Image (tube, rainbow, N blue to C red; front, top):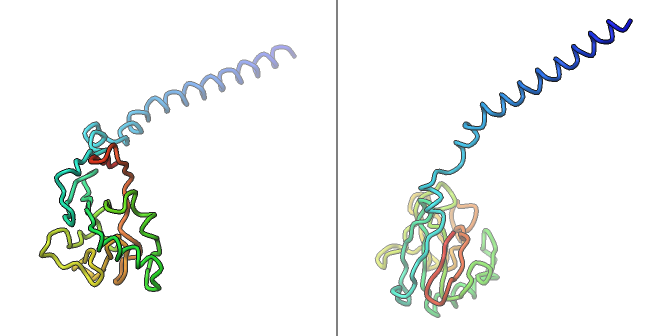
Length: 177
């Protein structure tokens, strides 16, 4: 009888050892693949962009690049701020969001410059560009209109221009990302 119990115990030990070695080998073999899914060092280096706001004049809009995407920075004059705040409760807002939730400082609007419909780049950064019916941005591909707070007002875009994570380092420097 003891010989049978010893054989079963030995078989269980061999099975457990084989499964453990196989699982460890599988984990070690798949780790390089899993690690390759992490962002490359050059991408991680671009994960934040420090932008000097000092040279941007009142009323001027500039485009920065963050993670390969255009970021619109608008130094809004009081008239544009007033338009954005006046439209906070407008009934035609497709994606209602108050202006003060979209900005950290009223005079600076920072949004990702990619139309939320199909990923086009809206016009409105240059003075001669069409700015749509609400003075913000206009996507000519499918006719989306954005207001001075980057909120969708008309067209097929389902939501407002995205606000990237950003913070002010000091009075004249913003860190995007």
